[in-house]
Image (cartoon, rainbow, N blue to C red; front, side, top):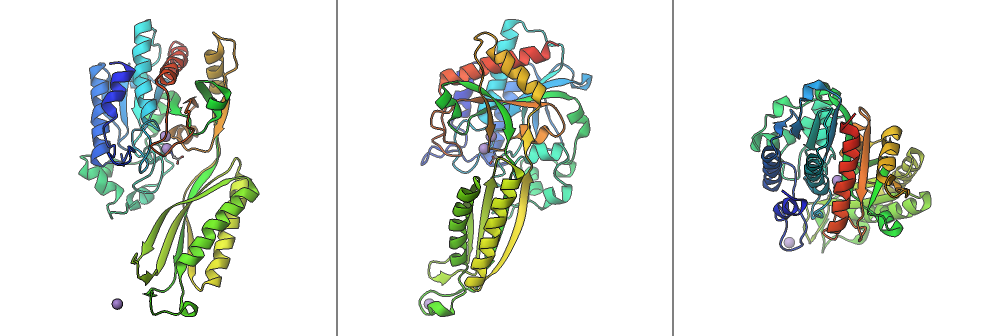
Length: 405
Ligand code: HGY
Ligand code: MN
Ligand code: MN
Ligand code: MN
């Protein structure tokens, strides 16, 4: 099956006819359909298909128990109204690269697998990279069992409803120990490659990033009869905090986003009792991230005082800076540059990836494919088919170098 036909099969799954964006949330119908597609791709290639204890899907060529395996892949879930490429491009390219290696008659001296990590985006339960965090022991069972979506369904309940055993989840050091190298191909989530006119680049690092929940609690009251001076309106402190976040991010040289909001009681004619806003913040280094988040929290506390409301701030997730394996990164750049003699761009990114989570345990590298809009986590995300095919060839070149040793 060609890249094009695999892409065409995945394209309609979970796409909103209104926005053209995707809602492939972990363990929902659209995600389950994507997972069925993965299984079909594995089986149609004669690969050994398995689902691990955390619901990640694997398609193996060779004996995984032999160890030192070369693994490639990404994720198939999406953010709310996500683009088509973030995640799926890596999975489809991995199968296509395997096809290309087989067509070249490549020798596989090491076991090889394509992987689909579950719940990378964290759109449903609030925490990103759940599958890779669980497998690598970076997420405790207590926290995993407590993860709850807006619909009140917990992660274990959602897994069970999709036919998986939630009691099995947990760290999987044996599986991780079999992997000698992991390479993730991903659509670029910025315009660096577009500006440098390169179809493919290599990742250098992922910025440290995290998610913080800000709960502003005031007093619900009638929107018509309550005098302004008598109000304890948490929306005001929230609104001021959003503006402060922008100012702090500009001052420090970081990014800060309030993109998700819950309001109680959420009535048009009621002053809210609770405004809960989620801050996503990222910076090139830890010091700057600490400074920007500290500055936002300080401003939020001052505004909470001004408007007579209570504030709780909870850090819901955090991923420290990731420096990808230097030897593997340099090897990728060398392999990709060898025919042209050109220097392949090596880029840092503010986006999180399963490769970043795994890099704490195994040598890991990433390839980025040019995105002409530079937009991601939106239906406007793009990649030209020629660039996707250049990405497949680049991935095949890299994998050929790795499996043949
Ligand atoms: O970067 C993110 O928001 C997610 O991990 N993809
Ligand atoms: Mn994403
Ligand atoms: Mn992604
Ligand atoms: Mn009334």
